[in-house]
Length: 240
Image 1: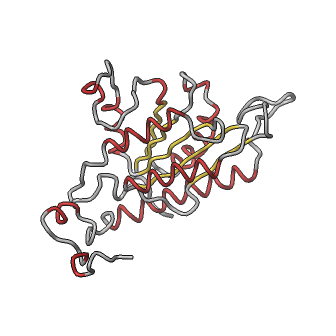
Image 2 (image 1 turned 90 degrees about the vertical axis):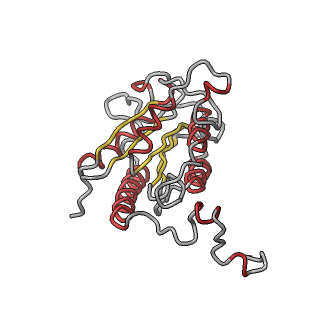
């Protein structure tokens, strides 16, 4: 059995609900988190709507006109975690507005470098969990997955999972069913993808940690600033 006991995972819920216990997305995040806990991963949840985190692309938005910014405390959790799982509901087929704020604030920190001269997110793993009662799981997973990858996170195979009900108004994930049971809890597609996503995130985080992250040959920003071009200067600028 693989040992995951030295790994940390952070689950950030970007539900529009102010309280975590009112969020349907949290229920599916919990399913993934429980798998990690059972395998020794230290898990922490952040409900972003419960914090005053304004939009913007700077580390501290109080320096740019906002009266309060609680991002710094959340950032400490982000940087300490080898695994980041972003949860969002669907609205008009897209991620929530709070999810976009999270991505902006992650972007705000992407100028920080690790001790190899790489993005601070190199060596970390990202995935996403999506719920709703309208189409958009794969589209939203594409947006979040690209954002995390562009910032420096590594995404494993099948790094997303989700649940949607029938098109139009209807019950949300985890709503109680008359006669017992919860909506979506017995959905084989959702259960399978949530399980695979969770395990793949753990496996990739384990591999990256044992390897000491991603080698910095060719991606060292400090070396680039110092004049190294990793072969680009000999290509005539034509790298296509």
